[in-house]
Length: 395
Image (cartoon, rainbow, N blue to C red):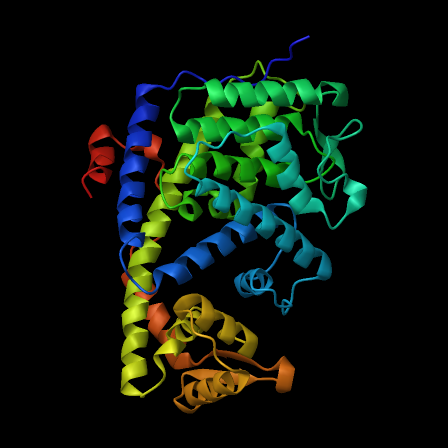
């Protein structure tokens, strides 16, 4: 017996105009991040960390950006619980694998084995949740804290067939890649094939479909940061389309439009962030030169200005990632002391517990840069006129 999945709606002219506008914004972003600028690597790492942070926050795993970066670097987080650390680490592994696969020259085919492998990476720390296996029974999604059931997945016996249909629909779809990726996300979440981690898997699959199409440097193609900031709206649209249980006959267009809106706003956010990062880099370069500080301290100063906490081990890792330079712990201690003496960092704690934060001067620099930038884009691209959207293609 064949089991249907949600079908991609016929893409309208309005939706094609929005897709064209998003493509233009992403082309501009791709041009910006491919320029030989030393801060681009830092922006890539933070963008991936924000995606990991956003996707996990939807599931209740809250962590600061510096804790996410610490887990990525193999450090112990300062605040995140052990459970959150494991969830972050698992998702980080899966996303890193996705981004590595996207760099292959050959066409990447998404199959059942790949989905199970990604799931195992995410959930391997808890074997009770059947990592890498389809769920063995019924599954219900409940709203916390009321315990109300808001969604019931299809029967577990249908999962293998539904997943095959999902993959066939994905590979046979000729819609724009952002629409195909959104539909893959929707179908996986609605099938709910795993005992746990279905939301994270749906979001990772969406990113994988986008990244393999090489529409942009892969780490910048994700909308997971946006979804993390707009969790209530994300759940609301899924409830609207799902209507409490498996209803593949329902119209998926509201979901597609929600995802296209997310892409539009996220692309504008990233372009705004690129411009702000460039200004911050120039400001920190000026501080390094005027205070006769080591140039390798630039990334740490930028982190401090943005409110991130710095530890010696993290400073060493940042220098290695940014400049390919290996420095000794003693050198790192000396560098950080120089930044403190210059009034740019403020230390807290002793010995291994010591962290450094930006001084008021550093925070003032970043606040000034942010105040001079336009606010985060909140426009609904489907409410903009064709002429307004056309401006995005000529920016």
